[in-house]
Image 1 (cartoon, rainbow, N blue to C red):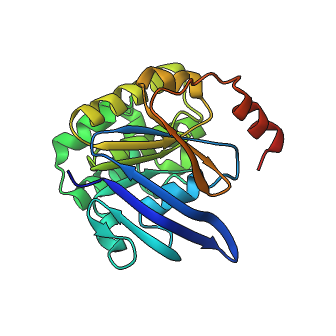
Image 2 (cartoon, rainbow, N blue to C red):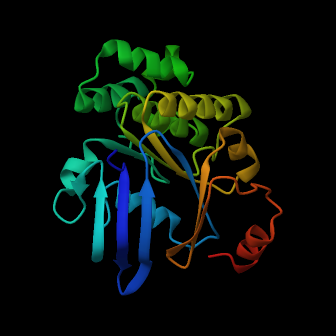
Length: 234
């Protein structure tokens, strides 16, 4: 079976700093993978590399069979990244934003309606311009714009940030459903206790390299490695 993600000695430079310093990683289609590590470990850069948004400085990498050195544009058509930026157009309504991403992915109006419904973005809220939304509503609109694309690879950076309990539960349900349908989900979060329920494979990232890969690792937020990361910060 072809890997969803395959990296060999992957290095990504931010300026002169090696945000990724030689990552080796294989991810199988349909997996849910948690990237665990302290702030500044390289988790976000790894997600962005897999999304085709960062340059592979040295080493080799493939995402969904596409070479990250020469086919990053092809990668972007098949993956979706939920990052710290919303990826939304402020002058468009919520529904217009979701419809834009739906058209880009070849999805139809029914898919737009379903995505808006799943994220409780119906009624007057659907017709509200993004510039007038609260931070939590923007986050929900971003998730709806990801869901409507039905990507083969979901890349989620702190997916529960700024969300209420109901929407956090919805995100978990969406992740389970995506994986069950054959999509691959790679996420980075510090909310380890919540993510434990998804039973992810845990990949530890420290100093821009993979330091551990354990599908049965404890997700306790009070584990020594997490405490050390919190003290170090970024």
